[in-house]
Length: 566
Image (cartoon, rainbow, N blue to C red; front, side):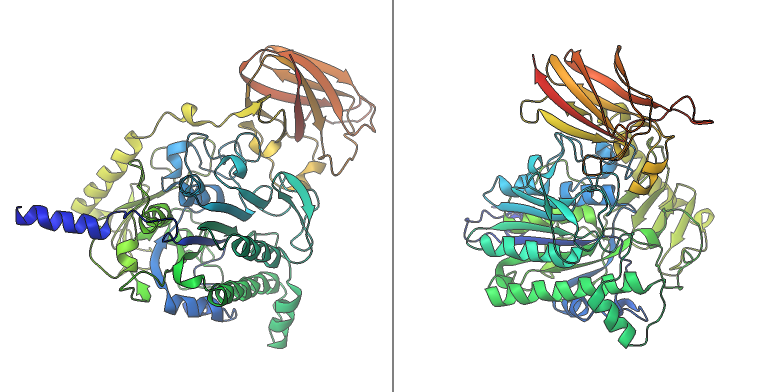
């Protein structure tokens, strides 16, 4: 056998996915903290927040110091679960019909479940709450989640706060007791304990520290006892310290249960937050866009004690949230799909060769319904950052990205431009990527639509906006079967039966429409229509009473759709 072939075979044996038995496969735990800045850790220089448990993990695990994620929630979560850039499947905002994970994508839960893993998510999903986009249809055996991307968004249970919130547990509303982060770690640890005899995947995805922020009673008192009296930031700092307490609880559980040795653990944040509270980057206090590193760089720590030759501590290689899935598959000995954008970080965990030092990473989030070429994009390569195709920065010598040196480095600019052009030309047409809400499916004869998913028109976000009788929009829907359908139109969700305060209600779907009159005190309008299978635009319309001066029409923020039969 030729020497080069022998070397190649040895490398494949060492670093390619190795077939593992059910007993050998590691458990996978992913903890994703929402909206916590890279610098909101005491180890990374925050002057107030104390995070001893996370700090300790960063020293005993592998800590990635140039780890990058999309600058917003839905794209970041989608990339973590798919290992693919979110623009490939039409996720590039948190509302407006482009925050839904396309049905054709496979998730980490799908891959692991197919290999015999028990799978569960606890906390924030934000990738679709209508059929067929709920977690139970995306590979998760169990889900315990709040709706939307933050507590009190339109999709969330009405009136939720971080304390004593109502969650969706496997499709049913359940009331919790306590602070959201404590509840979710309780649920996650309970799941691990119940499934400790099998390989499991546990995804704990906290709504903390996303706004609305809320003071955690115990950690808030702890901060005040230290003399912290900044009432503006006390709630978020208390939430961060509570996250740290729960990370400590998780690490303690893994140690005492005997699961630590064979558990692959990830701890990370989902996006940068303009280095909130830290002033050493140019982004602090400015209004520049999301193309810069302060919105991309997040903390990421990975622990897997069973992996031999692991060298804990910092790693400075360019890595990203798209690398999480390929790393999981590699460590678990599961074949990697050919369409992933991410790279396995396993060689970096093992302190060995095999990592692609020439890798280039693309971070793009248009933050609009329509994507645009070179819109809100950073192409990253080693120390270089090409922003929007017009600016080039050397973060080794200009960490704050203040000096555009694109005119001085034609070669690297051309190389990074070509990388982005190749990526952009590989994308499917945007109209082919819109995720439709399926109505009348045999698996889900009932479904709820909400205004966060309007793909045209306005894009309401929080429950506070329900008082505004002015917004309208359109859903893209697929009627799964011919037959009669019931449409229940509401201004407020069922759990909050307040008056619509409208004179008429109307449904338009394709060329069909139905209209009914209402009393001003009615809380809902129910309209029945016979529909043919197909793809349509769905619109709703409330008209105000004639005696209300200056009022305008608006759309139903919630629509409950039932298939009644053929």
